[in-house]
Length: 246
Image 1 (tube, rainbow, N blue to C red):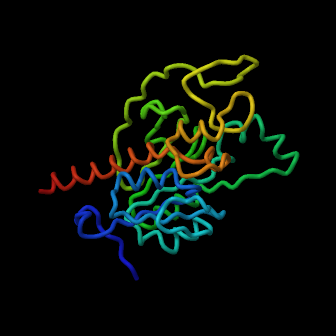
Image 2: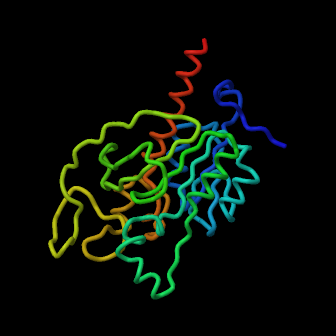
Image 3: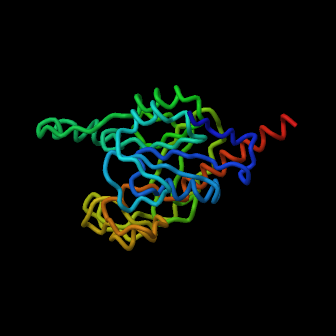
């Protein structure tokens, strides 16, 4: 059985780093992790749906919990973005009755994914929205990276830790209609359609994604800047551990 590389001990020039991106969609997180870990990083994406625009090295279509249980221990670092549609406050609150009336349900994978991740013994990060059951170890915002989206996301860190980075003041509004009022702003709404929400070209620019033109999947994708920061920060914690040990 293939053993995962201990990236705390083996220089990147000597052995490839194996990374798993679960619920990868087109690979917004993959792209950021690739930038962080460098060219000697091999990233496998897993998604329940076919992803012809996926930008990683290997793609597997299937159930992420089953894949982590079977193969998670083979990776050096794992990122997972469980489906967020059933996690946000509107779905569990204001829209709950309407969804129930029409029989609309969403998968709730955070707990089973966490259990599978913890069983691997590998360092991981799990991402989701406000209102979800993801532990809120880190919050990232597009303004931290000068992006054209706000897109607050929360990250649960497993097997490592880092302080919360500063959250800069927003420069204005998200463009579009809200509560009957239309506002201009430096940010676009990268979700849904109509009402001033972002076009395909605008989402590509706002998130820093240039390899897909699929409007729906662009809306779903994480900006690569988020996971590039996550990956670089994780590597910095390992450098600190090595320095202390020395």
